[in-house]
Image (cartoon, rainbow, N blue to C red; front, side, top):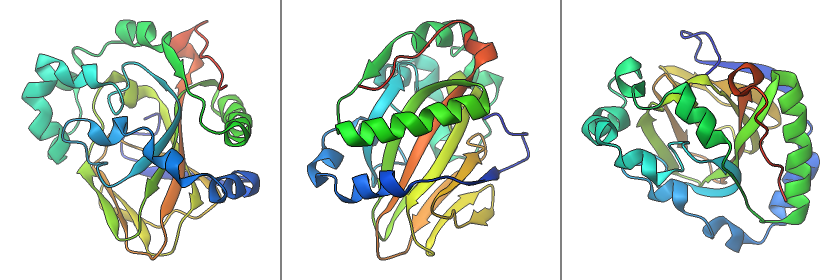
Length: 232
């Protein structure tokens, strides 16, 4: 969350997604079922989604199950997942920059689809330059028609400092983000940055699945010379 604390989101402008969209349309549907890590996280709001994870770092709470085993997280979990509270120092006390930097050195690479990986890597490199940082979590997330992502806020140091970027690849005019009571229909092929420290949810009332590319960019000043590994 590199946006101003009171800014729910920002739209930067159009992105060329034509080749990525074609690759996703032609993708083997079974690949959406291979990894359920994000959907299986305790009390996750993402149960009704599917993901294709191309790259992540340990310590990223939406992916890393160890995060949810911390005593302070267990005690705070009902509040964290209900979205009734803001993420503050109380919830970050065990998620420090020091441990974050250690975690970011452990990047896991995944082979999903060579064409999709190549196209996404190229786009991710452009985003790294634009936002002056390194990519960490990179994934495609699908919200099927008539499904929803429940209200929540995103906990931990990692999610408080990254640029969380969304690019709608396939969407419809009946799919809405609600960010701190700001309703937005994110347009296909446009780049958005989301303030994930504010309460947010998604409702897809359309007849087609919504697919977003999510890329987290860690500012260079926070990671120094640490470099994330590329996609395969």
